[in-house]
Length: 168
Image (cartoon, rainbow, N blue to C red; front, side, top):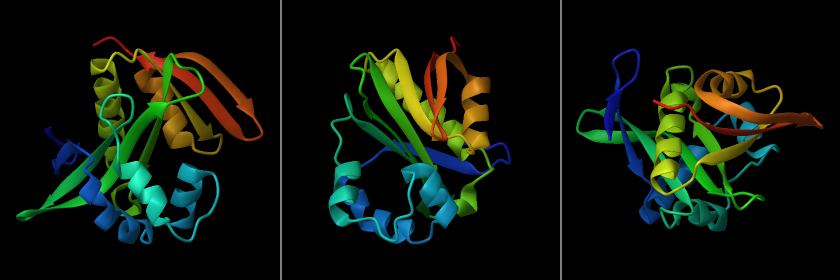
């Protein structure tokens, strides 16, 4: 899928490939401590190869991941990843989004978020959930503005949200 960010920057959204492991680990090292903490709820100094391989190997139905790439001349640079996978409740899929620091606050997270929900909907998933640090106001605002929230509860600084896409 090709689209443009609000500032006009072209962005391509595509399914993750197993070969993406080659850039995932170096890209992880360019993330800020805050970005790592907001995504993983802990600081990790490295993305272990087995974890990167797990993230890159999905069945594109029950587990899906999409990559946002920014056009850089004739090449594309990864700017973010969104994923869903089965959560604790079998009727829901858990969503996570990660945007590289240099591309944050440009609309990539929103584009990825909608694309991953649409991919889930195409695979029969009607309800999603996410665990978000309560201090992650950008993601909480995105959910509040862009989805139908069915449940939101805070426990030990983490907001658990159950939601579905708004009807188009």
